[in-house]
Image (cartoon, rainbow, N blue to C red; front, side, top):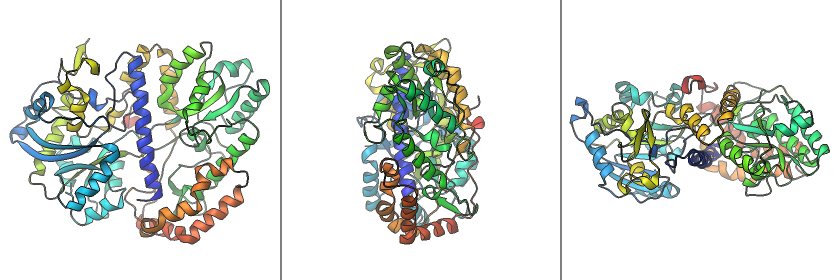
Length: 552
């Protein structure tokens, strides 16, 4: 797996945990404790799988008349305490006319377990995996281990509609064939720049619209009160990622070279990346950036400082908005929260959001499966007739109906056979459209007493995501040199510089950055770039329309 892809996978895991925490916090504030460890890529307001599973109506389609039987292996994000044969499983079996032999593995142990299974040569009929972004799955695909699914996507429109066309296009091999069912995720998860609106107004600072105006505002804040930290954030991506986009790049991505738009290069070769790091270094020298930035590994220090009135501007993932609002009301009741708009950068680049991966893992079907039709019937059922069952569960067991709306029961009111730990192992994939539910999110804000900020949050969400920065490299694009030696040469020549060194080390400036990149190129990086470009004819930017996925 490439360095960029490894980082993207870690990013996906980190985002999963981050969003999960935010959703849980918001849900508890709203009095709905039913949201807990679920699908790893849930976004705020998404219908998390444990809230999912629904009405007890059984399938009536003639297609489900034949019993579907298959083995199924998947990771779980919650406790691995599933007990086969429980009441929920029986209800599912009856409704979907299915009988599964389920094997679950804690997500942290899943990849190791999968490697053991592969070595045995005895693949489950249906199993989760990271997909074609990992070279070993591409190799197995070429060796015929997985079922080609093109015909099933045409037969079952609901399955194809789970993911945007841009994602299906990314998953095609050189022959246009698809072997992987992606767990589509919301790729639009912007970083917000929160600011103390009351403090800005007190100092007569207009809301910044450019990087230069922001820096001027930070300087005025420092002059007015040296005790206040002008700017804080977790790191250059999770904290100050929105500011990074104002310098025109997608972190961990491949983008067109400035010299040749038809040549893709890794992001560390872009001028904007160097300029961004040097700008952060300059802010640190001026005392405008938190002295603990990248030093304190407990990133929550930045959020705590902002919530308690010790910092004026905070860069952080938008999913934390409800938590920040609630905590500020307690610790700094007179404070007023504002969200900066995307800022124009020093070179004219418009700020925005970085596009995350369009999927987080997914499902392969073994080419040796006896009855693949049976699995696809069940998957289609879960997205059509059984969609309510798959989202909400069984009325009276996992949810109640209030004013015509299904309301998940708190987990402490749910019988053991219907708790999340008994439902998650039996779930498949949900449509990307369910990964961001504005109506549910609005209810959560209102229930938590912060409904007055909902419109502002929603408007800023679309303002940031209107301009997105994305990697142009497809997940399936392979470089043999990278596969063999990419990790080593990245670690040897670039990692210390990129992972904070350029910001914290005064001896590492632009010439040192350029020298490190040259060493990487000479050690094999140039060959990696050559192979990536040769193996990916299209250099087009992925086209994702957020208003089609999540209409305003």
